Image (tube, rainbow, N blue to C red):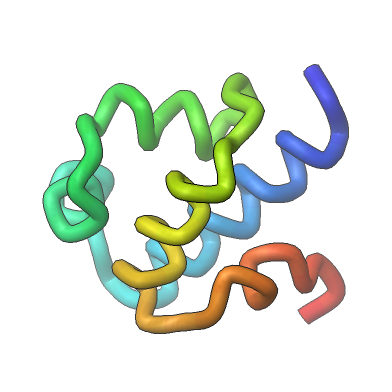
Amino acid sequence: MDSLQLKLGARIKMMREKNGYSIRSFALIADMEHPQLINIEKGRVDLRLSTMKKIADALVIEVDELLRFND
């Protein structure tokens, strides 16, 4: 697995949990299947920009905030 995918997945999971969302509830908000979200959070998926946009919109942030790994 790519280390960028792992970092991005961990960041998405951290942000989701910080906002108090379960995997299932967040997947519904982001308009995706929860197994897909699980794979993203585990770093198994090379995300498309459109998927990153869905996730960012659901977190009410800009896409670039997903890539700020030092926050």
